[in-house]
Length: 279
Image 1 (cartoon, rainbow, N blue to C red):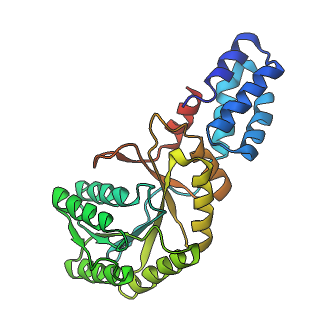
Image 2: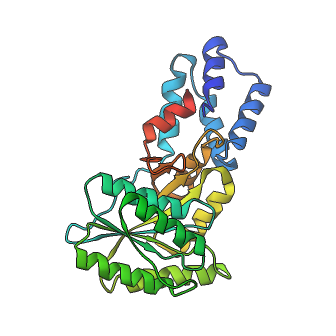
Image 3: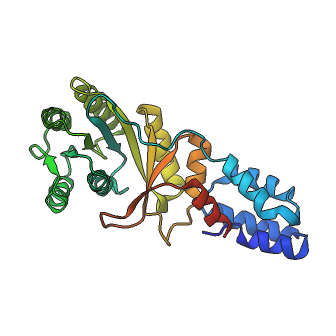
């Protein structure tokens, strides 16, 4: 990332920034998916920075634009913790379900997975393959069947097993937005006949930039998103989208995905992220 490294080096070395330098920085910020509103705010703050404390001042400014809500997973102390994973197809949603299940199992907890994206056969097959690989039970139904029915069966099975966690994959594409949101609400309502849904995590592909922010707005308006899994945050993504999402939506990023293997999921570390922007 290192979006501000050039700025810090420049201001420390010369204690001055020409108009062309500011234009260059503005272009870099916009290209990093931070967005126009936040770019303007950061440039205004940057103009007030003194050379002797450039890095510290920018770190404080950037940190102030992150969400201050807890990044800790929401759990159910009295039974199975139910986590719904939502997001449009192509954002790494199903892979994130599998990686989260693997992370939970490696932590010593038991977990059941619901293959609730019944409209996409590849998603069900993918989770079944993952389930065999990581030795986790995957509940699935008929192709193009009712996703809520699969989620309900999985919730019953998790309760029977006294599983610590139930992780539910959901549909990522239906005929239109209202159909999709109605389906997600139905899944949540049906599952809660057995156990409360504690966490709704939204997957966003870091490489989609401002489109990812638009998706986050749509989902957050329709379902109670409690956290974000930011996927594909690797060398090809500038990473500014994380700052934009947290600033504009006030939803904490809880997990980041950096690859396709089961270990490529980690809790989001805001301090490391800010350091990366400055490095």
